[in-house]
Length: 467
Image (tube, rainbow, N blue to C red; front, side, top):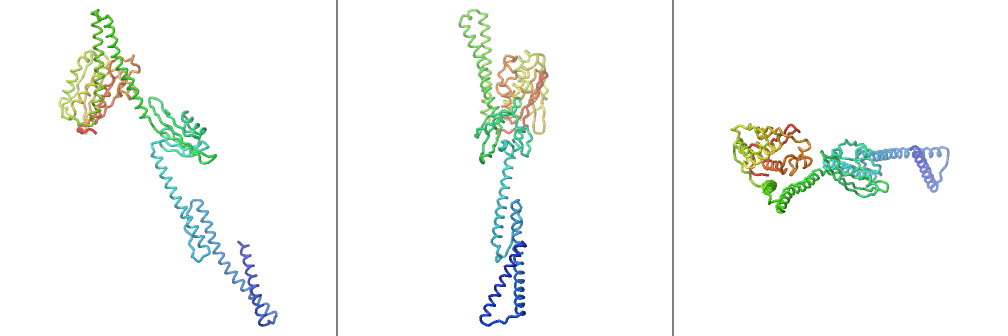
């Protein structure tokens, strides 16, 4: 800056000297000058004074202009670091006015773009935060740049927000292979991956998206969509078809086999004929019971848009009626049934549906009980709900089976050959459908070798129209 002022001063002195010489030449032309030491000194003094005045004026102008330039430079530096100082205001007569306006407009544009980017980033992070799909962004260094809470929940890992190798969070071979295949092939990949095996099964649909940002840089977006519920429904459908086929095949095969045996000549032996006919009759009743249970389930589903036939009834007579109908099974199992329901306990309920619930719960409590066991029937009431409790001292249900006993055709025994109790496996499925139709809830508490307690909770003031 000092060199700049020195150059300006030299130019001003030279300018004044030249101007003085021109004036002297003009004056000498019209009137000869008598030169003397005084005249020369005077001229030099005038030149010096003029140069000093002009230099001072120019110096002040240059200093103000330099201050403005310095402010612009500082402003541009601050803008490069995402800082936005106030606008530079200059009068229109200032030579740097147009430049200052351009800098101010650039700052306004950058401020607007920055705010827009921040808003978009906040919106993206908000969407990512509440997105039910797990999302993870991996860069070309195989480092995690971004992930959302859903991904942490699915992986059951606390994912660090600082960039790190993705294998710190993903140890499952199927997922790492999917990511590496995406990097190798540079194509999107998709696969169904089981994150957690049974009994706490968790299945996701994993999708990778390959994004090429430049020749050497790319990103991979990993998305995990929880399809556990869909997977379980598909498994239930497969089990339903398999179990239904088996349950239908067994009695039909028996009936067909014994009928063919009788037609082949066994009918001529009265003792064999009587034995085979009893077997055919038993298998026919089993087939009829299975068909009736399936029809009951279909009928319950079909009635989900109809009105409940709600009446106020006493519970004890209803229980006594169902107990009397099951007396043969009670005698066969030598089970003691204790009716602990008060005679004056009344509720508003659909009697037909409740009768079917009691029948199925009592049937299971008797059928899966031990010889000489006990079955207790109790009720309880709160401000808004009442509960029907059926407890037995039977074989009990394991913790794993308790999650599936309400599925159609599901039998708690791991092998049909080990099932010591006959049945269709539809009783509890029917109970659950009936309870849901009555806006209630059913819970099971059981322990192997100790017994099972089924608790049906229903509203005291049921809504007559189902939703």
